[in-house]
Length: 314
Picture: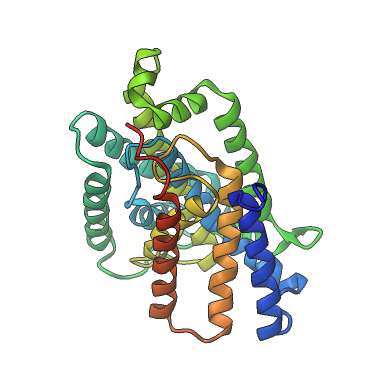
């Protein structure tokens, strides 16, 4: 029974249930081709949720509400640097990560130095970036993906699996190692469990908290780069649909909003589960506003479950 209550096990069972329901509602839902497409979409959610995972693990009610806006900014920067040129793919990725990482760094400095609450700081930053996007684009699509990037993300690379899925797997391995084996990763768990105890133990609390927000910005930039390759163009608000799911994926995977426990393995399962859920809702012809309501209800339900634990750590 204890095993069945484990968040990762529950997420796995939910994934199997969604596949079974989807196959019953729309035959072919659990087919190989459909699953490959779902994994590509899950990979993009999984990458942006990686940064959100780090912020939430660090505790202090940390949630990054600016990830959607930074995703759009990363896509815009990458698209304009590449402008359809295969030779500029790496330059586009580097520029996107540098810019969004810098905005994430500003989030971290505002939260730690100016002591602005994370929700307020990141929400305000989202507004600033959205306004900047409108100024830079005048509300029109701007920038183009390189054809080679689009082929890498969409077309099969090895054993029928698109390259994006391998990129996600590589990032997952690196992030899991970072959290479990590196000093910086262990510091994140320490400040999420008890910030004052971590400070007294010599953990650089301020630097660690700034780091997680900078990394969240960088992961948002990577996601923007990947989504640009998937959609082949940039438009205002492209990242808005990823903000709430990035939080839900982390919580479904067993990382409580109080921080200090959990990890990225569960977030991977959460990203896959949400992607399948959204695909199932599409197959059932539920309108976008209905899907958003369901996502919100899922988050509220999870908060009711995790909110029954001990009070938030300080």
